[in-house]
Image (cartoon, rainbow, N blue to C red; front, side):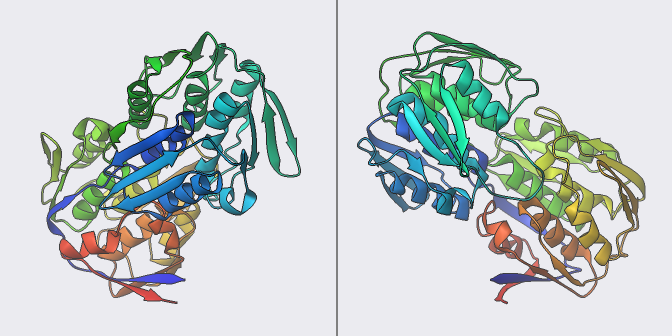
Length: 418
């Protein structure tokens, strides 16, 4: 198991590029089940979760290959409709295989998912969506058992926006009979990216990126080619890395519009942020003040940047309040920041951060989930001495070669075997 040693006190400066979006490529890969042939995806990040997804597809009988950030998935039917526990337990997004399997092959056996321990994140909304489309759903011995004669178009109203639920229903509806209407749908850019690929395959999806998505079912889809959108969370993390060290960092190959909520909060805090085409720059800042943040579904401030922004606020002048509304257990990084001498008072859904520039001290800390690991690395960049982040494997699930990107900007980080 790897750990990361971060030696603080080095200003980050320079240019770096965002990788492809983890949260986009996973549903894209699972959508391949909907059509035979060779699916080709460009700008695919080299991540542990991408490897898990490829392993799951291979276990179903698909062939995958990966080279130079291009992944090819060849589908020739499936040899089984079972997504086993051994694979699914490692990655929560594996539940997204349910909709494609059920829609095309009329049955699916999918293990209840695992992944980061940041809350219950129930899949009830996924299952209710499938039931509304006529599927028979049972949960037995840790598996979701689903079957149907053919999914039927339906009107589905989510009680709260769900990214995974929207993606699962959207994929399932592409081959359903009739029209499906998803109301209160998630609006994330990754939803739009998936819809664009489904339409390239011949699906009829309208309204992605809005709260109402309409899908008219078709008889058959075809494999094709697609370039994955940039990872807005990685881009935001790299911007915060530059900001927290008082440096000037430009992130290229990103979509500035997808970072608007973060950019607005950083500007409110006192940072100068400039955008140009597909790049964003955070300029040197000698001091910034605390601002309040509330996470919520897109286009509001993303929960996946909450931990990183909290690290930034530990170095602010004044107090900030961060409210987490998406996941009920996403403050596990707080106790680790406190180990670094941060002054934070956490409640169940609210954390009060009393900024104290230059007061963080290096210490051994433990990553509890993907975004918490990024938060602790960022804090280590400005902590005195050495910060040793253990269980860094979480980082590899969502960030491609993060230490190399940080080192190229001037950070002193090192990956070691524990």
